[in-house]
Length: 226
Image (tube, rainbow, N blue to C red; front, side, top):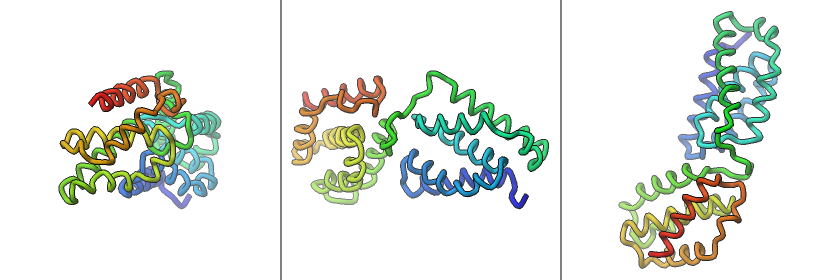
């Protein structure tokens, strides 16, 4: 074996964090990390198990878990050839891997875990809201106020085109931030309010949970009233 168990685990985590550092969403960073390690997962049973467990542990830190990823991970981890793994890893490493595997399966079996049913979604609701706020705060003091809204929409242009829930979440968050800064007269704010008045929460389907739909509806109602 020309690799070290703990080093491989660390490599998966480090790769994921590198993508996060490049401003990818949780979902995108994990998807790219998975792609980077696809070849290595085919090298052997221990490699596959180690990488898949690491990816699954990362997924559990997200606000939602991809349905497709959950199903694939469950299938892989419940059908591991433990005998072959014992031939590649030390007793200590096998025990650590099995402990990690059992933890993942236990968590994945939790009926209360939030699931993402839409494979197109790049950002999840609360994650998207936070990302817009962070970007807004970073630019508000360094560019003219009249350019802030356009700058934010430019930054998240791709995401606005991705899914309806991402588009509306971005617009709602931006509108709230503009109003909180006393920038009610901005033309973009009027455009956003008009778009929100035409919006039907039911159109997002399974892109948002019922709790998220309620929260978004409440935020939209407050914006329209003001």
